[in-house]
Image (tube, protein in one colour):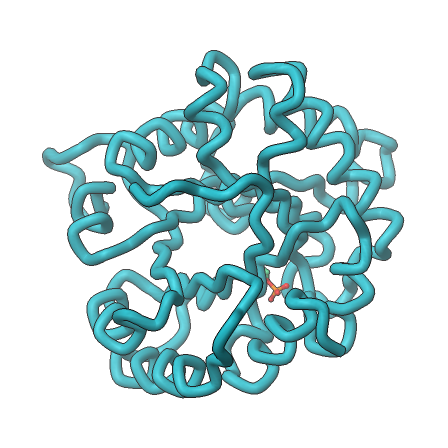
Length: 259
Ligand code: PGA
């Protein structure tokens, strides 16, 4: 795997269950044509499995990374409907999202499952984007920090520092995902600082200074610049606004320090 920079600025589009392979290829092609030379942010597109190959063909040699939305922890076997990390790597994936809240809360994924997937991703040379975040009920009960510590600990416990360094975290408060209710910069910064501190405690001191922590949850073209102005926020995991080339592009421009 090519060397991964320290705390890279990264904007990743999570397309979720949207688009045919043709639509995905067209969106990727539009983004590729908008690329400016001398970009300062890393860009990743995470289409549905069925569109990976088509999107890969459109972003070849553009510097845009390919990512998947999930993987199975086992390398192969009788797991009907599942996809292994080696399959994703062979299609050119660089990233894979693990522990997205829609999988934790919708498909019953546990912290232990997330840890296994993190390990599996790394075995296949994929950089995991590890999602953590509290529900509204947990926030209102004053449990935000406790949930984040538990989720980070669950995913990273026992991981050696080199491996932990080759990961990305996405703080995605569940109440902000797909709701149009973005966290305030203060709320996101506070949560990111907790994640950073926990990474340092669970794996090795100072690790939090090396790992990029993205914010996710209703990031849009018109709120991105404000979020990226925080030193705690290294980029974004974008759902809805990544489905349209111009809105995703404006988020990338904001991440690069443009307006
Ligand atoms: P959203 O999704 O930007 O549509 O809120 C973010 C995510 O779920 O990763």
